[in-house]
Length: 226
Image 1: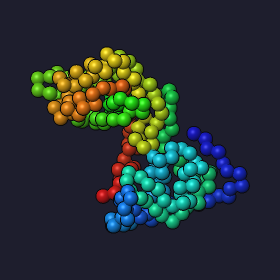
Image 2: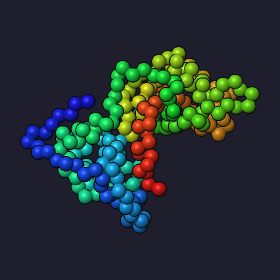
Image 3: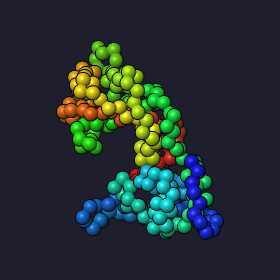
Image 4: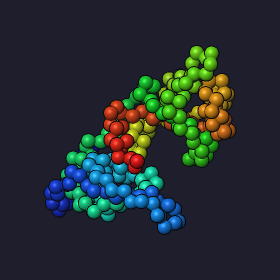
């Protein structure tokens, strides 16, 4: 992805490490949570900003300059950083771009999001592969197998790369018959606790399939608040 340079911008050497402070945000209340200090690598900080902005270079520059962001219910702040378009573009080039030619492969899918009613869905249920792949007693296939089979019969539509989810996103809109089968077969195939959660959706309109790109998922896990 080629990013445009900003006219008149001078070259800026970006710091490779940035001292960051963060605390849990408490809506409508003055927070008394402790402030934690942590040093982020530049790539780690940009990774977090991307989850909020996508590859919008102007917005990323603005946030780095402002020195603050809300992410996953935490407020982060740091001394503002001026980032030139060329230098920032080199950092962003290390992160994936959407690939419209990418095909859905069930073996790459690590999680799905079942969408309840509404546009957008008012209720969703995230299911990780390890949970959905657990087989009920005396069953030859799992609920995960069932959903992957559905995806092989009706190819999900590619929707782009999500920096927030760190995965390529595929979507499958369900017909009324498919939605009814999903609710019915979840009782038969899904682990009991999961089957209850699926039934609580009452109706289903689609499934989102999340397919990460290998080891790139490890960056953010290292910098989450502990």
